Length: 145
Image 1: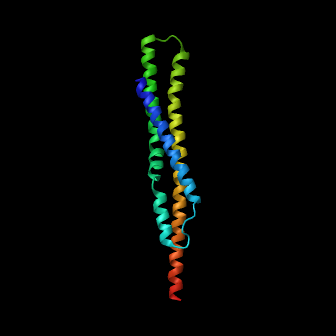
Image 2: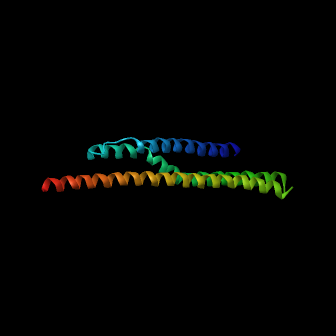
Image 3: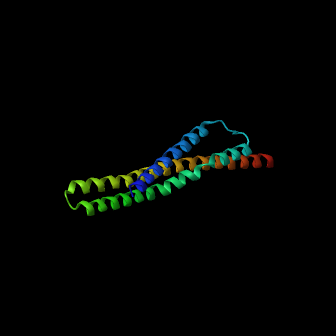
């Protein structure tokens, strides 16, 4: 059981590292000059920018579940120890339960972190799409006049 709990925390750490790698990569991709004059270049930028964002959505969705899994496993371990040793002190069981709840807190924090970045990057894509639409509309209107 302890190995499973360690595996859950390791998985949460991997999600954290890879998710932040994507955030770092996308954040600097926003700053990169892109073909503002050509709508086709802007569409290619939006398509390339969207790659990898699925993981931020996945991480935001699954992080609380991983945290809850860690908590449940931690509680199972705590109650198994309580069953073996008996009630020798409230401090031991309270510490074990407190440590188990840390997994839920980490999962919720990760979820909020990735969700905020996912929404931020999606808003940048929407802004770019709106720019593309307005450029195309302006080109069509200029051609008609």
